[in-house]
Amino acid sequence: MDMNQASFSFRTCTTGLQSDVTIEVGDMFFHLHKFPLISRSGLLEKLIEDSSSESGSICVLKLVNIPGGAKAFELVTKFCYGVKIELTALNVVGLRCAAEYLQMTETYGEGNLNSKTEAFLNEVFSHWTDTIKALETCEEVLPYAEELHVVSRCIESLAMKACADPSLFNWSLSGNESKQSPENAELWNGISTEMKKQPSGEDWWHADVSFLSLPLYKRLILALESRGMKPEGIAASLIHYAKRYLPLMNRQSSFDDANHNNSGMAISNPSEADQRALLEQIVELLPNKKGVTSTKFLLRLLRTAMVLHASPLCRECLEKRVGAQLDQASLVDLLIPNMGYSETLYDIDCIQRILDHFLSIEQATSLAPSPCIVEEGQLMNGSDSLTPMTMVATIMDGYLAEVAPDVNFKLPNFESLAAAIPDYARPLDDGLYHAIDVYLKAHPWITDSEREQLCRLMNCQKLSLEASTHAAQNERLPLRVIVQVLFFEQLRLRTSVSGWFFVSENLDNSQNLGGNLGLLKNDVSHQMNPAKDHVMVVEDIKQRVLDLEMECSNMKEELQKLVKSKSSWKIFAKKFGFRKKSHPCCPKASKSDGIKVPTSSVNGQQNCGNGEVNCDTLKIN
Image 1: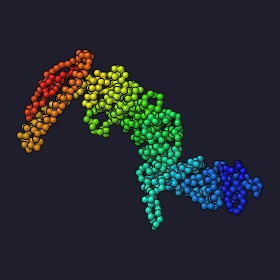
Image 2: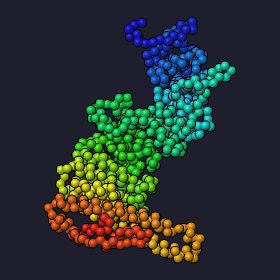
Image 3: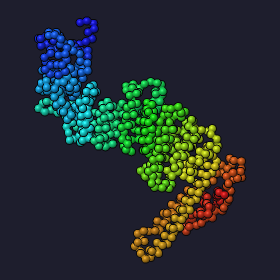
């Protein structure tokens, strides 16, 4: 053997006769005999006849494009010599294509390789696991397998089985599962046999098809859609496939991803280009039905698309999908690191586009007028009673509070995000107030006019008692805002006290009416016992009024401290249009078991202490 042939391998048929034909396939030489070959293959018969110039000479042939290469041709030669070969799901596709290429039809012998491989393929299609294996081997001989419709038949067989009830068929759970444990084996006549697992759940096929290449997997998904599979099943399979081949999908949002991308290092196995192509195909295949794909997965896809520099069309599609179901998002998933040239830590512009898309959908689909302001107590009923707009308002207020510490977060961007939410969507403005407070703390250099402009975003009348108490002592807020908070809180207390005394008067009337009715119907009045109920209600009202008086007194002290911190009360009153008036408190006794309850008149006078101290009341000109 010379040096030029040192890298080649040889196969020789040992029949006792000298070989008269040498066939080169790739880097392998086969020393064979003409008669077994021409009796089975039409192509080899033609090639041997054309190359035989004189009798007795050795014929040399070279097969370049034979499907399956030398491995498949070696099995073909064994078949031609009558050696029994074992057909499996892993070699039948290659042999079927090679038999077609070599023209091994029934014309050249009954039961030829062409018909045998075709019959075995039909058996393979009846088993889920074997069909998966056969489809994977189609990659090696793809053009020939496509021409013979082997790929399409494999995909149709898998789609039919995935859409059917797996419990009706004898399929194994996974074609790529590990060996079964000993406890899954049982003894029959002393022989150990493995128990075959049955598929369970609607996602039993996801792991198997995730081993397919992207082109074949895409064709399978399209076949499942055409067969009417539910969008939820298709979306779940796509999520499983994406998490398998996109490593960034399994990471939490962090700036390490951005730094890794900016360092110029390519993502290994698969490459960054392959991951980008895969991600774009996944986005294209995702069902369009709202809510089928979780918002969390969509946001992770969007973050990964930014890292991999996916096409603008792909990112825009993901932003619209997230915007359509923004009310289902969580705050941590919205914190997308900035991959562009902006100075902010998080991608504020992306969230603005998502929010704008959500608002455009809500405005287009909203048929009813904007709801009124929701009462504070309704927030205790849980998120199920909240509208999507209210849920998005809560999410965006939390988002603003998270990104507000960024010193590069510009005031116009903050105002744009906060003002995009309609006023009726916020039952309370506590979340917005918290975000504004965080922003003011992180940006102490903004001017007084900018502070007032920022505070106009919130409605002081919609702050809870806790938020109002905090705002009244917040030195970062403009003075005008503090005064408005104090005024609305005093107005709320006055209204509450007046309402409770209105209820007390109604209870007095109810007692008198109940007494008259008791003379007529003794048994009914005895069961209801209105006198006992009235005593309990009055005791409760007494305690509440005392609490309110204490709060009013504390607010008065805070207001006096605030006034003393300025040059004079006159300048304060002139600047904000307030005047100070003192009214004597007029205690009013309620004859109920000897309990004296101080009252507050509706015209604006309010009691403090035990009904003997004058209370300063603020009035607006």
